[in-house]
Amino acid sequence: MGQSLVQLYVHLVFATKHRQPLLKNSDCRQRMHSYLAGVCKNQLSPAIIVGGVEDHVHLLCRLGKTIDIAKLIRELKRDSSEWAKRELSIGNFYWQTGYGAFSISPSHLQALTSYITNQEQHHQKESFQDEFRRLCKKYGVEIDERFVWE
Image (cartoon, rainbow, N blue to C red; front, side):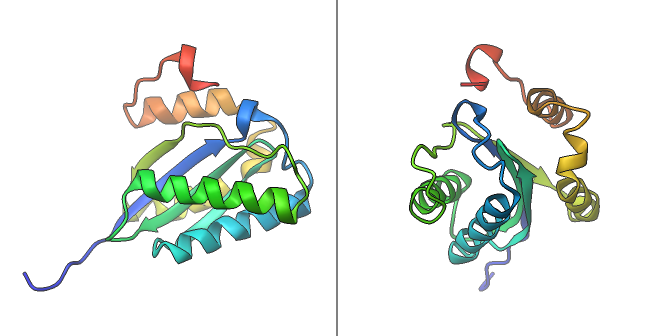
């Protein structure tokens, strides 16, 4: 085949270090989400939606054909941490080391987009830890509670 064709959608979830509420200010949070979408675009992995609450983000993107998940996450976290310190004046801004990355069928994009859009309402009823446990169970990923919460 002379052409490489790729359509891989991934749902990425990662939290601030120790889940500190560093993105409590809604303006800062929206700016961070926009910045993360820009990093995705620069990595040729366009974001469908970025959302979240004060201590974690959900990012749905189409993974580019020349990048792997680990590199995309590394670029997202590194660039946005530096940006948050410089532009948002959050000197102690860091992301946790780990992350969740889950493959998404194109037929589930609309439902996941709605889910990410409604994160603030969702987290009035469910903690981040319970949400992440549920996502891992849904996708058949086993977690070790001793290490996952850092």
